[in-house]
Amino acid sequence: MTINEKIKLLRRELEKNGIDAYIIPSSDAHLSEYVADHFKAREWISGFTGSAGTVVISKDHAGLWTDSRYFLQAEEELKGSEFVLHKVIDRSYPNYLKYIADNFPKGALVACDGKVFSYGQIKNIKKTLQEKDIELRTDLDLISKLWIDRPPLPQNKVFELDVKYTGKSRKEKFEEVRKIMGKNKTSQYLISALDSLAWILNLRGSDIDYNPVFLSFGVLRDDDFLLFIEEGKVDADLKEILKKEKIEIRPYSDIYKYLSSLTKSIKIYVNPDTCNYNLFSSIAAEINQGDDIVSDLKTIKNPVEIKNLKKAHIIDGVALTKFYIWLEKTLETGTVSEFEAAEKLAYFRSQNEEYVSESFGAIVGYKSNGAIIHYSPDKDNCAQIKPEGMLLIDSGGQYLCGTTDITRTTYFGEPSQEEKTNFTLVLKGHIAVAALKIPDGTNGYQIDTFARQYLWEHGLNFYHGTGHGVGFFLNVHEGPQGISSALAKRTKVPLKPGMLTSNEPGYYKDGHYGIRIENLILTINDKETEYGKFYKQETVTMFPLDIKLIDQAILTKTEVQWINDYQNEVYDKLSPYLDNEQKEWLREKCGNI
Image (cartoon, rainbow, N blue to C red):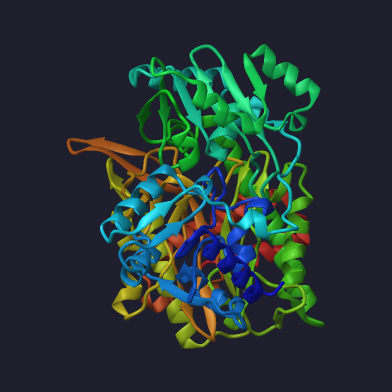
């Protein structure tokens, strides 16, 4: 079926049910950012493949709302269909709701599938629509009926992550969470976020591409743990280990029945932002709402995790070194497609025994494609990289010892003065964040300005966030913290020692090139004064910057020192794992300015 034919079929269902508009988000029943193929309803109906976006379809309009990371991609993917792109500038507000409120009359009926919206989202949607006397139904899954060849729920096996990586046993994590439950006077804790379940159980899976998680729900109780998961996903040996630790396996879909069987005498802790609306509504017990306990714990990496994740970044830097050597040599005699470059980078990572997968689909943007913030090269339709011009590669690996995410912008040939200036302005912002010392309580919204200040001086900017949390062999995007100019819940979270966050300012000139410099930074203790505790950032990503793109004339002495210290550290940490030829290449790339 074409996209327009799918829209037509959905409109028939709207008419049958007396629905004026239907909302389709990007999430799954666990409110995940990235989802298994089974849950890609928004992609199926629209053809838009980006990770973020919401579709609203009515009898006379089909709209897709997405943010600046995907403007160019969405325009391309929506071509030839009835879909209209609505550009979201302020991600803190659900703009599609404003469209519905402004364009539908009183008494209109809007519907959605409550399983793929959080309780908090539905509460907000209802409030907004009620102000316009518009009703919302949450019990309609219209997509399943139309999506005839819908992929089944994944049945991949779950595996255990050794405590030598996690630093804490399941028992220790259970006890830590139960102490918080005790303070909240709750005897049960519903966990529906997949990365939270993977973390507390020291288990990993492969149900979602690039994210080592598995579809399940969990309930931590006073003396046991109920894991709702398809039984075939847990092999007999692991099942026996879990059973000895009072972890009981129950069918995945039985979570609704279990929650509805509870009584008011039981008090259960639930995070309304990670619990889907239908799941939340099925709870018969007394509910205590609050932030995700596990999310707040897992974002603070313990000493064992920190030691391991630093190892992961050295492994990653070695792989990147071998990749860029290969790329330069190959370009001496021919061209390389963006798609081939992404595959080759994954190959070099895979040569390490700790490697599991990439942490997201690599962004390999040559020249103008680099200006497409979340560009993904298509095998049959992508640019050929030549030994001239700007190349942006944003990629990462999932290793048993940690998750990486790095962006490097490199140049083949001699860059123009404009390109050097803009790269250096981005670099100055990157250094400002990396070298920043902050008092306890400083959040990502406050930090964001440091990354943008030099671009602003030249009338330039970038429209994506400056940083996101990163999991430990988990999701490459992890809450609760974030660095962004948008005043949102995640940007109000103070950075604390043990948090791993990306530092990735950029600049994008449409139709020409893109620049982004991304390292991961670990917040650590600095000092304590009469003004309280102060923290600083430790850069853990290890790979050189392209010094030919740096304009030293607009750098301060302090910035030059930071660059030289970083380049020297990269060489010192990576060179022991390289042969002589590779060391020589790295020494040149790690040159000082």
